[in-house]
Length: 175
Image (cartoon, rainbow, N blue to C red; front, side, top):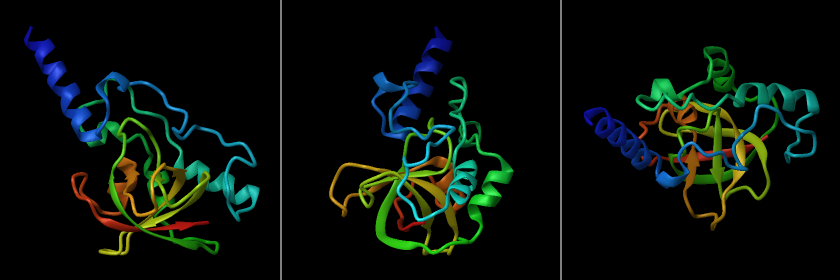
């Protein structure tokens, strides 16, 4: 019985942390970044080679269902992906604006931001103006006015030096 209570408490705490509906925990969504990307799916100025290189950095598998205790267990990105995502941009970018960032679903792997600043899926970068750190990310549309907040993946928030409980204002760029 104690194991059942502990499991329920862990599930509920993750649900609160993620801002998720508990009935959807572990389910897949159509807007979850996938391991592959088809040409034409993403709005970008990048060449197909550049796009393939960026998506190799930003995409990661979802964590194992048992990995629900710590941010380290939920982050499935590799050290190589983190290093590549933190590199300065190699191509011109368009500044889309600023947004208040909160932790998105921590069970969705990779570097991404769901934001009302984009109307179609793309690739770009987020910047924490407080420390200058940035991360390459998948840009995923989120319904709402442009002034609404955005949801950011756990590894992207960590890479830009943001506490998972903070609500920082970040800058969003499209490649």
